[in-house]
Image 1 (cartoon, one colour):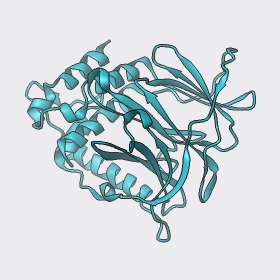
Image 2: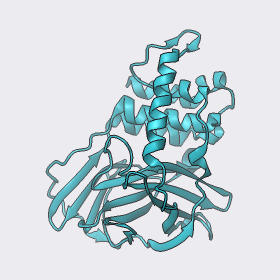
Image 3: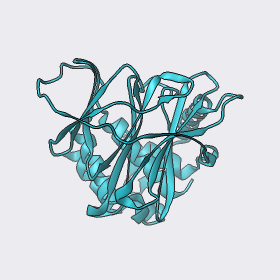
Amino acid sequence: MSLARALILFCSVLALSACGSARSVQPADNAQIAPLPPPPIEAIDEPADTRWMDEPRDGDTASMYICGQEDSKTTTDTGCNPTPEMKEELRRHSEEIKRATTPAKDSEARAIAQLRLEERGRNARIRLIAWNSQFGELCLADDETDEEGGGGGGPFGPCEPGGHCRDICLSFSSSGTGTGWLSTTAGVVSARADLLRITFDGGRVASYQLDGPLVPGFRKYRVFMLDLGRGIETRLELFEGDKLIAEEKRSDAEIRLMRCSNKYPVDDMPMTREEAGKSPLALCFEKARSE
C-alpha cells in the first residue's frame, strides 16, 4: 500500500478511534425543515473494479495505523516505533476485515447506483458498489470519477465487524485542494425511512426525501447519495413519518480532524514517512487533537 493510502487510513483512525463520533437515537428538535427533492440517484448494474480489496498492507501502513491511536505508547522523539506485538494485532484485525468483506462464492461486486456530479464536469459521477459477503451480509464501497480520473474507498457496510452500520450507513469522502475541495456521501439507509435531515458544518440544515433504489438482494436498505459541495455533515437524522428512528452525530474533535484532511489533501503530501510526520496535515492533526 502506498504512503498516500496509509495516510488515508491514518486519518480514518484518528477520526474514528481518537475522537469517536456518537451514534445514538436522541429526541429531534422541533424545527420544521421543508424537504428538498430527493437527489437524482440512478439505479444501474455495472461491473466494478475491486482490485484494491487485494492490496497488501505493509509495515508502514501498520505504523501509521498504530501511531495514529490517541493512547499509543510507541511515539518517541525519534518517531513512532510499534512493537512486533502491535503489528501482529493490526495484521489480525486486517485479516478479520478481509474475511468479513470477502464476497460469497455466488456473489460479484457490482455498481448498483450512481449520482452524476454535474458541477464537477460532464462525466463526473459517484457510484455505489455492493456485494454479498461470505457470511450473508451486505458489503459496500464507492468510487468517484471526474475529468481527471477516478478512485474509490471501502469496503464498509453492515458486513463490517462491530456492527457500526445499522439504519444509517453512509461513507464520507472528499477531494481537491484548499478552498477547492468537494465532498460526497454515499451508502444506504433503512428502507422504511422517508426523510433524512442533515445538519452541515456551519449550522445549515437540509432535509431530503428518500426514494433511491432498493439494494438488490437486501431490500431493507435504500441507496442514498449526495453531493455535499464544500460541506461536512455533522448530524444525520433519519425519519419514518414524524418518528425519529436513527441519528448519527460527529464530535467537535472529529470535525476538526476532517477539516484538516480537507485543507491538506493526501495527494499533496510528501512521499517519505519522515516528511509526512512533519507535513502540514500531521501538524494540523496534532493541533486539532489538542484543542
